[in-house]
Image (cartoon, rainbow, N blue to C red; front, side, top):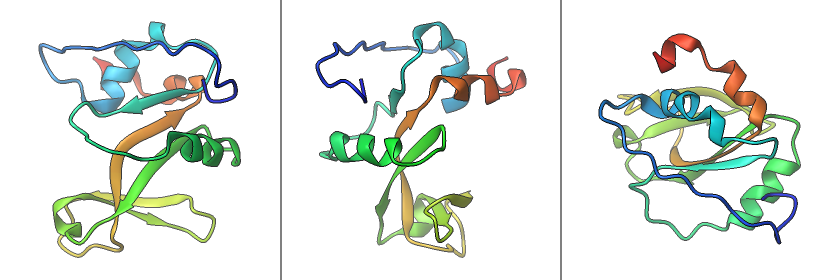
Length: 125
């Protein structure tokens, strides 16, 4: 969907009896992913972010995964990301006592299909 905006978009809503976590859910539903980049969004988010700009950002770098971020006034209550000078994540800490930044994980990602192969099997079991 990222390279061709006229393509239909597939959605899959997954309900888990036991929470698998973000990576576990992705691994357990790998059959849904085809050979195109795909969007991952937490179901409890309400946002008005610009998906086109996010897709353009993802397509402009060589990495297989992009994480949407936002600035927060309450970094001790969020998952906080530290970036290097190239906007690459160098650390991520959930609800840190001493935050290294005020950039929080928005729970929205774009991933390339090969990212699924990087998820350890243990996460999905």
